[in-house]
Length: 185
Image 1 (cartoon, rainbow, N blue to C red):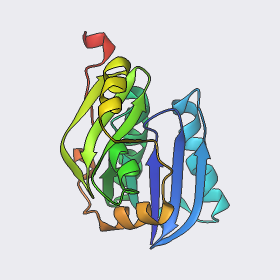
Image 2: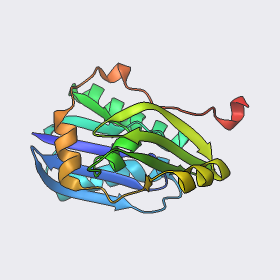
Image 3: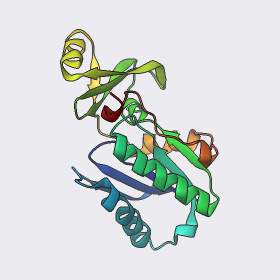
Image 4: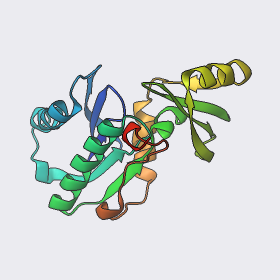
């Protein structure tokens, strides 16, 4: 069983292909200028390099944010479309989970965004609400609290976490928005 994981929550694109608990291929595009034009080619590249067919994918996992408004929407839309077309299960993970999976004890986890950080208390799961702090608020918070930012993703922990998630209906998968977009202000 192959699982395709798609993460487009910020400026990097991360695509994983794994089979059961084994990483098959991983592709990371750094500081991408156009998520909309780079994500699908990265997915196609992973599938071709693994010498499989798109129909060999049995599950989709997607990072639903919080993060870049447009980036998250692109990743979620592509994931929902693949899951729907192939009639396969889909699971979701937050960008907070991506960092928090590496923690051994309770800590605040911060995910960078252009003008600030998304922040949550984490201990094997998100505890309470995810908050958004502008840069100045975040710096003050960070001076008074232990905060983990943008930790390296442990591939094995990520795959294990994704494998533990229950699938949901692809129509129920939505981006996780914490702050209002600029247009609404």
